[in-house]
Length: 371
Length: 189
Image (cartoon, rainbow over all chains, first blue to last red; front, side, top):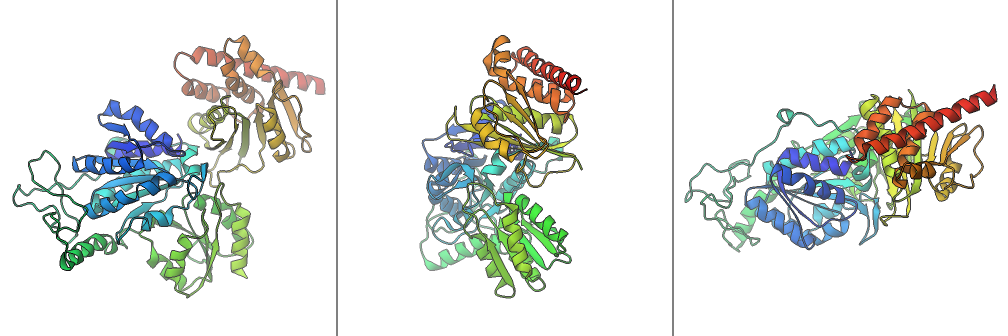
């Protein structure tokens, strides 16, 4: 099956039972399949009037107790920004699927890019943290989607599933395990009775327990700065407490959230840093460079946000250069440069999108790094 | 390591992607190999240039694109004009002979085999199954996949209620391919 369909199956396996969306190429097949499958399983798909409505409908459904997702591509994602901030401040577990296409604006509807990486990190106003995963095959669209839902429950942040047109429309064999072999994290419901429960009071892990509509609790959810009870409290100490927790629950767990795949890193003098489809396109370039006798390693980010800075920092102490190919004009390379902090060379291999790199373009930069 | 790279080209609505999908499915689900399919299409629902790139390999596939195909399956003149120059020397072109009236010059050692697939499909009652005739033709002459694997993939990929028709289309293409090969072998000897 293709990556879009596999992503849908992953969401169903993870327990997603509510999707609101506004179909957009190249993500349409995700919701198309969900709309066909969900009546048989029990759940709901709503085709909303636009992406603004889709992104707020899922947040409502999450507070009604469901695991939720919306699915879009660049132009739709731009419309969702307001509610991504709302999801962050209300700590609503949710998954946003972005099947990236060429931009800006309507751009290239049927052609790939990886140019929304900074938008998902910084697109909504104010400070907040998110998690972003980058699958590179239909199999990973299934496997990592389950991880995406589990992380949304564990940290109560918006989790972004950063596909691209190639991965979305690429068809390969997908092995779906028995349900009993799939690890699914359920929502952490409170055991406290009404009256004692405070919706935004958290223990040391900084992630509060939840309740759902209909359970008999009286709660208040707002996009305004709020105290532990969820009521607006617009003063500096409350803002400070809330922000420390919103950011801290991810920042304190950065190391735990690292998911990278390394290849030939032990003796590497040059490291190609990649994510998503670009990790597969880098393969032939790295192989060819190694054939030519160069010690080239490959570091692939499966979780791109939070950025695995410590891994890059460690490598920066001993490698000659990093080469960073990506289907945008230079986004994640800025993070690599930040982590490297001038300790070694960082060479960007940008691409305007519409197709993937020629492996030769990446090879040329590897050879440049070796000089 | 054995690896075959294939490009299927035609127009949106002809079943170009499904043709590639069935070949990939036959390889990866029924023939124990690995396969990757990449599709390219325009924003229009029908009539725009459309192509599938299929890689079939004994090993897991990294780079998913087909740069220099070993084989082409062509269902429009535009696809022939665009893709024949990319063919590997010694490669194989399978084409719909009435939709590709003008075959561009082939690379050294390459062969081109034509089939009137649309006419066959019309004789079977539905012009729609021309892509399955092409799949059968591919199975008959390419030697990449076993007959049974492809047949299973066809049955598994077409709507219920159309399986008989599609199976007949598949066999028509397959038989024509086998006969064509036999004739060529006789002619050569």
